[in-house]
Length: 238
Ligand SMILES: Nc1ncnc2c1ncn2[C@@H]1O[C@H](COP(=O)(O)OP(=O)(O)OP(=O)(O)O)[C@@H](O)[C@H]1O
Ligand SMILES: [Mg+2]
Image 1 (cartoon, rainbow, N blue to C red):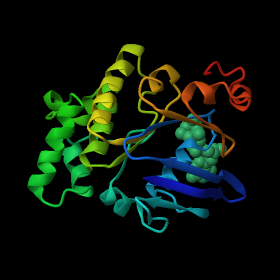
Image 2 (spheres, rainbow, N blue to C red):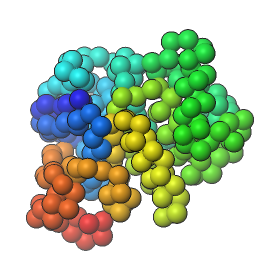
Image 3 (cartoon, rainbow, N blue to C red):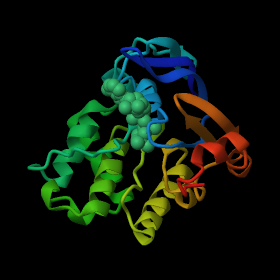
Image 4 (tube, rainbow, N blue to C red):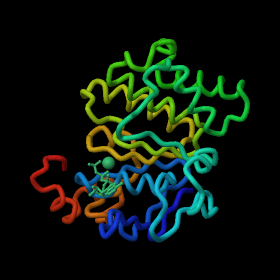
C-alpha cells in the first residue's frame, strides 16, 4: 500500500537514510525500531512527504507520490503523528482536531466536524474537547496528537514514538486505542522504543541502524538477528 524504494535522505554530506526499501500492506501494522539517530523519523518524514527524497521513490496504492508534498499526501490518506507534538496551545482540543480534519480529506465543514468528533471519541478525548491544549497532561497530549492524525481520515497512519514518556499503564491505554484503530482497518506504521508496547500491536518489525534496515520480519525473528542484538548492545532496549 505504502512503499519506499531506495529511499535516501542526505543532510549535506551526512546520509540519514540510505537506500531503504520499505513497504506496508493494507491492514498491516509494522513497527520500526532502532537506536537513537538510526534514521527512523527521517524515513517517516520521507514517507509523509515532510522532506523531499534525495534519491529513490515513494508510492501510495501504486501511485508515485515522490514529488507530492506533505499536505497533498495527507489528503491522499497518509496521516502522521509527530515525535514532539506541537498542538496549538491556545486553542481547545476540539479546535486543534478540527484544524487537522480541515487539512485532511474532509472537504466540508460538516464533514470536518464529524471526523473531529469521531476521532476525539476514539481517542477518549471527547470529555476534554473544550479544554485548552496547554492544560493537558502528557497522556492527553498524546491522545490529542493521535486524534489530530486520525481526523485527517488516513488510510495509513504513521506514528512516531507516541508512547514515549508514558508510564506502563498510560501506554496500555494508548495500545487499547491503537488496537481499536486496527480493527477499523487502518494500516499502521509505528516507530516506538518501548518494545513490549509495540509488540502488542504489530505484525512485522523493521529494525534500522545508521540509516539502513538491518533486519525485518516476524518481530521475534527480527529481534533475534545478530545485527539487531549488536546495534542494541548495552542500550537495554532489546
Ligand atoms: N533536519 C536535519 N538536518 C540535519 N541532520 C538531521 C536532520 N534530521 C535528522 N538528522 C540527522 O539524521 C540522523 C537520523 O535522525 P532521525 O531523527 O531520523 O533518527 P531517529 O532514528 O528518529 O532517532 P530517535 O530515536 O532519537 O528519534 C541523526 O543523526 C540526525 O541528527
Ligand atoms: Mg525519531
